[in-house]
Length: 242
Image (cartoon, rainbow, N blue to C red; front, side, top):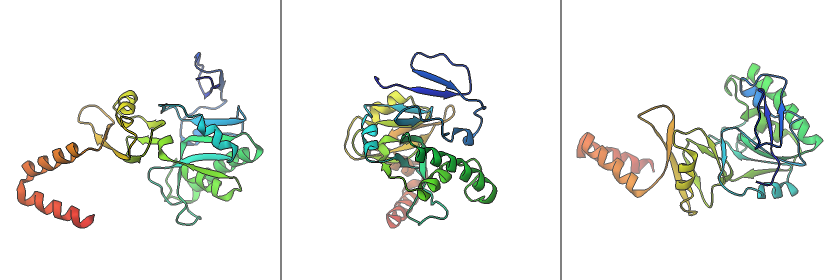
């Protein structure tokens, strides 16, 4: 709470939470507009956050990591392969990025947008409006010291995922409130998985933490809905797949 915060926006905003409010000279209408620009480096050490992020605890260690690295981000949940790189190099999510203020970082931001425009024209497999792929490719091409953050610092919702230790940053717009999700997902710091469920009422999805009770509930529903024979067949298929 004692750190300065800057908001970049395309609208007129008054809010006491922010120390600086900078209005950009363009309308923020699509994914390309969310690509970081060279002027978006207000501090020596910066933590960029999407508007759908929710910080659940102290994240000052993200600034400490910048003592040894230039930039840090978490893998995207899908971890898609990045064209033109080794197969083991995968996409990074761009909603939570820690970075230094340097000329090298500003060049990366420029290259990120250049690659975005190139990919939109030449690589239909990546998809229109996809900014994670060019970000990862720009990082791969650079000589920057890059650190991969664990998912606890960018827990995507509503998505399935694995956590170990305290989840520090939730990211997404699930139907369930972030306060409820934080209370559930951080009810323990032991190794655990979380999963998304489609809501029957309203839009969006809610998030739950996996439990034996849930597994038993799903198994009983399958048994009563399809009968013991079909349930047994599906269970055997599941065991073979595992």
